[in-house]
Length: 369
Image (cartoon, rainbow, N blue to C red):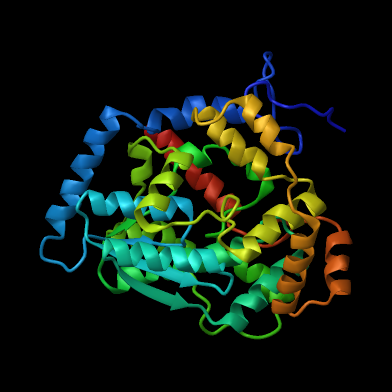
């Protein structure tokens, strides 16, 4: 067994089974950020100029259309702040919210306040609840780490399908290096691999899926970008993006409320990240989130070490959320306890396109040289 070790620069540790450390005790995630992410991150004047150029191109191409671009709005920090900045830049937004049945009341209020105050048109796609619950139930029974895959796949599939259907070419994404620069691959697997979603559902699902939003790998990698011309832009990587400062601004501008953790605007995600992952796999995703803030300069290592020692899930809140989640997913306490005690699985235990994706990644790397 690998000896326990924590990175000397961030707070990632050996709970990531694939982590490595150099002679100075600095982990591979920090090195990857410096070598591969930082060169593509522009929180400076250069980024401002690049973003202005991108925005002008979007406006010019869409001057005869109703909207310049589409944005997925969850009510969380990243997408909310992105909507605020996009409107400031003069972009005409169409917001899409894909409701998978787990919105917190705070998230709903945030979305309503943002759209009303910024005068953004909103389309809400409500995913058939019985189908979402069936897919999530199947994933829990599969024993894999990334239990957010069903929600995430439905979110992106719903957003991309709606954009293409309505001939909106540009999609604004809240993905950003400032708060998401570190995320161990060993802790999960990409949600856009439909082969994995369908493979797990074929094994553990109970009835046919008729309307669950899906995107095949061909559509995701070829049809949308190369045939339909869809472009996904991540503007937060072209500006200084400080999470705490963004929260202060949004609270002042449109009574935006924080919900206590990264992606905790979803009640399921909160339960999954704060209980399922640490209790079953020993993964505390706060380590990755706090480490991302360290390497992007928003937090000191000492501040992160103090934060990680705070209680992850108050027992009363955990019990309330556990009862809520199990009831919604039609699972008994005994069934869930058996899931938690069953052997842990990885995405490699089920069908996936991982081999194909790795080949494509290698080819792209060679073409860039």
